Length: 534
Image 1: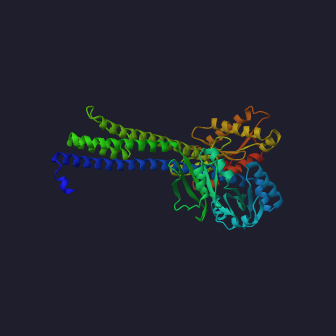
Image 2: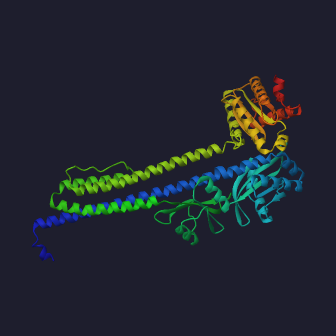
């Protein structure tokens, strides 16, 4: 073999050497670029399904669990429930719990006494009540007023919310509601988010809608578990699933929540990438022949330019394009067009991913607004009221500004509801909220305190100005042409003084509201300390 090489001319040797070297360089760089592009596509697809999982989890936490927590806090101040708990009237409590369950759609409710004993329950088994009694949730709710968590009760996993029942400042007990993490739960989550959600609980996968056949086969195989809180797995080139562990209050795993995405666009990208790379390989071989025949130096410069462009595009700068001279051979243009085609497809995919991220950001902002807005009246809810009041008290203390609080109750609202029905009662609450918003200042904060009660925070306002605002609001509602009959309100007004916390200010306004109702309703009453100052 070596003897035969001696008879090959130097020109042929140079041709063969240059051809082999150029081919090797081009093939290696083409393979490396292909792997980098394929990895970029895979990372983009995995990030997309992970973002959808985070969106579903955020919606689950902010809306579904938060909605349960808000509802249980609302009913924790329901006087019939509080009084029946204080008397330990099991029969009356069961009747009230069944009424709440029918109205709100809860399946399990329970009331615990301060010593931890069950006063009344509906829907719970004894084993589940024992698990509740020994959980940290009740202790957390007792110390902070309310709490929510995922718990294993018996053999099932539930979203549970609890709130303290108070009667005139005395701890009367604890109200607990629970909703199972079941097929109905993920179907509801899918309907509200339009995300393909799945849940693994009790060793079995549950899907919000029928999954692809490949995902169904994968779900029936032995589940390897989740090694991290978030994990993404490729079931097929176009099908990916991202899942996370739902843990209880102690950090123990309870269930696995997952989101799957079947995106044919990924397969189209991969086919286009493979086709482009095949064209690039063909062009590379032709280019190597041209290099060997024509010249070395100009072609090496072009190869370096193409390699640099491949690294730039693989680094995420998808707007970069390869340019060649109009006098360059056709194969050079073919290679440049292949690279530019891949860059254009990746740029389109990146723009699509950015659009999905913007949509996710918009959804999260909407969820944040929903978490502080009362669904019926579209004013602030109880949570937003508490946060705003704490912030205004801190601001008033720091700047030494006056601050007043109005608590408002719609007079004889229960009688109105019983006479004209709940839809008419809801209309009255919405109209009262609208009139309060329109007849207070832009920087005043209007919120629904609970039931037929509203609250208005009046920053940088002394008691005389606040009294004038309250009287104006009372007269506007008294003269407003409500359907069916006249509607009036009673207002309790209190001003903040240095050293006073939010609970004390609320109590002062509540006592003034009670005085207004006791004095005949449809009036404004000041807190005792404000009457003395006046």
